[in-house]
Amino acid sequence: MELMVTPIIEKPDGTTSANVKNTSSVRWALASLSLSMLMPSLDTSIANVGLPTLARAFDASFQDMQWVVLAYLLAITTLIVSVGRLGDIFGRRRMLLIGIGLFTLASLFCGIAPTLPLLLAARGLQGLGAAMMMALTVAMVGETVPKERTGSAMGLLGTMSAIGTTLGPSLGGMLIAWFGWETIFLVNVPLGVANLLLAIRYLPADRGDRKVAQGRPDAIGTLLLALTLAAYALAMTMGQGRFGTLNLGLLFAAILGIVLFVFAEAKVKSPLLRLSMFRDASLSAGLGMSALVSTVIMTTLVVGPFYLSRALGFDTAHVGAIMSAGPLVSALTGFPAGRIVDRFGARRMTITGLVGMAVGLSLMAVLQGRFGAAGYIGPLIIVTSNYAMFQASNNTAIMKGVSSEQRGVISGMLSLSRNLGLITGAAVMGAIFSLASGTTDITTASPDAVATGMQITFATGALLIVATLIIAITGLARARGAVLSPKEL
Image (cartoon, rainbow, N blue to C red):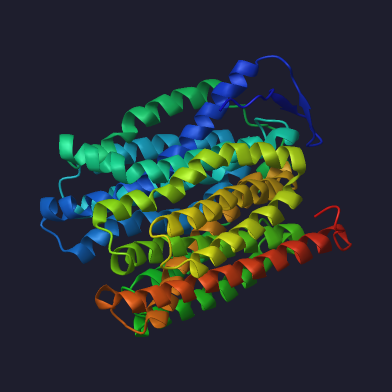
């Protein structure tokens, strides 16, 4: 899985030129960026498997232990755009190094935390470091590889993200069984030290002449956006699937926060987000599609376990093995998808990926109850492989059109759209599944009810992907000022 690239030099006008020397240095730089994508993804999933052990170790309830996961995800979601902007102002390489160091140090604190409150505080710091790594890693691609190889690099990062998500539960289970719960956090320390050394040695230096460096951090906008995103994330995750008064209050607070944020950004000289950038049809369409597709892809994670166990009767071990097929396929197809994007173009492959996802989701609904596990795994492979294609092509299309001084904040927006989609998907698609199954407690639903709920939920997901496909065609056509011809599609 070797990425053939050459280092590039960025000119004052923002253009780049290839330098045929030091190809080895670029490969090591990409290795650092790959680790910077792997580590946060690994910690998104590795802690889940340790929650029962942590509950016993700290003598805490399951509800309290949920905050071990939530503190990490909230920190990423609320801060990822802000840290991307800070990278644009103070230097993306500098901020990425700080993020790697903070993530590594916070991982150490997690592993030695004597109490649950200290563990949660360390997880919050770890989430801040993860936000910096996730936002600035994608932004650094434009300064590390030529534009014609952006798709390959995005595919590689997608592969590393999928590997981290896939590896987390199994690696976490082995580490806890062999060495104790502390090691699920301490495993990041040697990885972080190695990554920090690679980044210091090989990542390209920050440019000192960026106009954006004259700006100042937007404290008011940063605070408003963080509070707004936190309110929305909590509204979607609290209540264990029941949307009560607290959820409605948080959702209203999030809406109010958006209004205040837009008003504040229009008045600030150096805003966190320049609202005018959303007039770019390609950017707005790309971010919207990322959120919608992530909402749908969460269906496989929310509905899959209940369908496989309740409707098909598989035990926990078999459910886990079947569920791992999706992330595994994403890991295997991410890099090849990036190479295909480089060869055939981001626009064409975005639409191809969405069509493939719609087909796979439709097959999941149609084949319900037929062919056993194969009737689920086959369509799942179609969905996840085309999801990898969409991710590589959509990310490439967005980041290729971004000016150098905005790469950090746009990269943060891209990661934010994906995270918000996953959070929304867990709530919305879970609610659709529950309603379609005709019960408020899915754990006691009959196999037939679960099967019906699964069909309706995946059919809804397919319709959402069709809607996303329409956005892809019309949004990209608008950006080019003309309807896409059949040849271009």
